Length: 438
Ligand SMILES: [Zn+2]
Image (cartoon, rainbow, N blue to C red; front, side, top):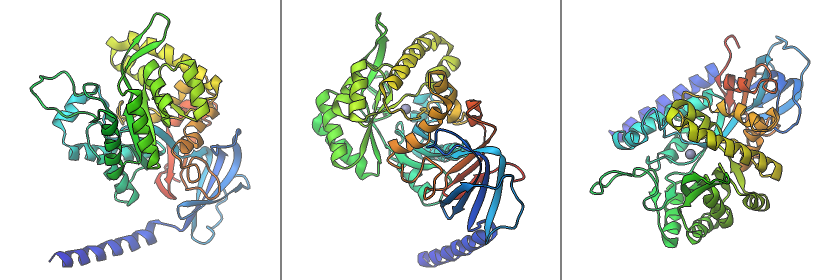
């Protein structure tokens, strides 16, 4: 009975894939872009044709001008984006697809009242939305109590079961005893945590081994909590892991040829992280000048998530004053990091705000903090791809790269906010969204 079902299923799958291939999947595309921002050049170019074959970009060439309605070469399909700007698919290097905002739907409720299966179902919608918003790759920085469900989401996308961006995932993340929610309930209750609780050098090494064995691409640690602004404007924090613990976790991660992201909001968390040699510093609201120097020396990435404080100030008016203080500190850190030459990649903490909001909402904030529109775009394309170790495959529109291409109506260099309205999305040579009539 069982094998019979499998054979029937196999026929159905074969049949449907053949029909699908014949009816909707041409062998390639020629995409005509009125304007192209390719992710690596400092200037945009005009009237560019991009050839796509299978899942790759096979040629990027100067077009002849306006789209010509000549018959397709072979079975390639023309896509006329004359009045659009094409860009590489956007990349967000700090997301939580298993979180649905943590204010409007209370964080504790998500952990206590929603099963992992339910949260994974919601995550399938989040990844589809990310794709619709033009984000064709994500680095997802922990499941917030949903175990290894991010590994399953990544695998389901890679196997073509559900649509979604390319994903690198970090599974459960780590923090020390008593530092991460759920907290504050009766001591008699055993409650879940939004992380794997890890203590000690041996505990750290063991947790890295466990998480990698279950399919994590990245390791993530929380290196501080709390946060109090000192009179001199420094954001002081309570460190979580000791330097010895952090060194062990970093060493075990690197020994196994993986990379490690560290949530570090303030003075001590950042210092311990960069001393231990993590690969990315997340948030970094305050970073001391000497730590910025170490980041440059060691090539450590800075993934500020500057939109989040603006979002919190809006939706939680009682935090507005504290958020304004953080915004001021982070804006200063951001400018100092740019001046010091620290590598900065685009990461928003999407999931900490609802997935109905495009992660592109952060571009105007980064421009306001001192990046040119082109720098902000590159932080979310070639730079983000570099952070993910995928620069050879994604992050720019160049021959040989994966065909991850988006388009917006208008010029994002003149108005960066239009990246929040993406009309065309191709990932891996497949179209997920296109303007009406195209
Ligand atoms: Zn986060």
